[in-house]
Image 1: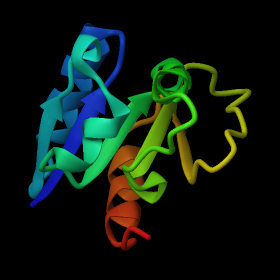
Image 2: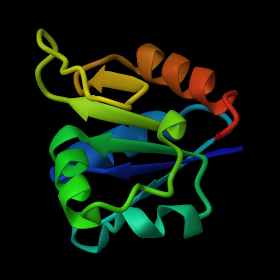
Image 3: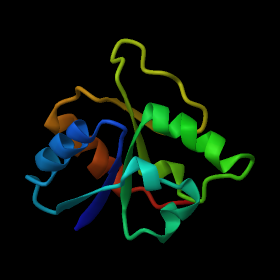
Image 4: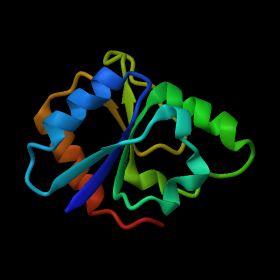
Length: 118
C-alpha cells in the first residue's frame, strides 16, 4: 500500500485527484488541509508520497525560513498549473502538470515510490 498525501489550495482539485488515485489498487490518498500544512511536520505523517501545489511549495519554503525541510524531496511531486512552462525548481526531483492524466500520475508515483529517501 502506498499512502499519498495531497496538499493544494484548491480543495475541489484535491478531492478530484483523491477520487482518481484511489481507483488504483494499492493507493490510499489523504488530503492535507493547507491551513494546517507545516513542512517541519511532514516526517511525522504516515505517508509515502507527497503531491504538493507549486505555490504551497514556495510558501512552505518561506514558512520553514532557513530550516531545511525534513521530508525527503525525492518523495515529492510538485503540481504546476502551467503545463507549457513547468518551472525548474531547485532541488525538486519531479514536477507534474495538474492537468496530467491518470496514467501519468500513476507512473510517476510508482517510479518515485521505489526511490529510497536519502
